[in-house]
Image (cartoon, rainbow, N blue to C red):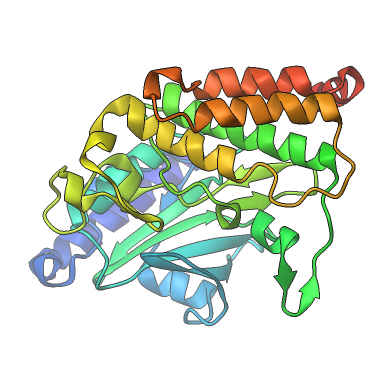
Length: 305
């Protein structure tokens, strides 16, 4: 029954796209390629009006990125989501957007923010993502709307570091093609609770596409921390860019409750991740192993439950 409904939906969408085919070049409307990317029960395409309604015409902004805004959305079934709206002047071609979606649809990891759907309609490029209601790691560690959000314990920090290391390990080693996040920072780490986190904001520029002509040139790949150097175009160096970023943000504020042995172990791997000699830097799998081995046995058992 579900598949039958899905087939009817697909046929209906095909007819709609066919009727407005003449307008697609002008408005960059959702293409037939977009429909073929969807899998029932996993993600779906949304019409622009659906997401405008869900976001109350993009009223509730919950985040700002280098190339996009994030808006809170309430879907028809009562679920909440986060709509990523690419800025018009920063958006790439329709093909680049669909290439990004096709890759994101193949990605699934408990420590990565999930993709629920997308929209490519009337010039808009929108991604509907999983909504994580808690604050980011940055908000947790800094003053938030004039109030300090509270301190994370050493145990909290280890668990969060492990979650993000596992997410990066997956992107580097198991995603096809491999994805280099390139913008690992505390504001892109969303807290499920004080012990667990998900990594957000990986996408188009991280897949190796430029934003103007779709060419893979060193000058077209940038993060919010600045342009990449030419040498960073080697695969290992691009991965080490993520590793270095993780090392820099492991412990911005300690409150005297750190286990000295664990701290020294993490300092050692962080120093290795910052080496100028790329061959001396650990990969994400090695970093995951170090964090796991530094966690106390009883805490490790809690993570496995």
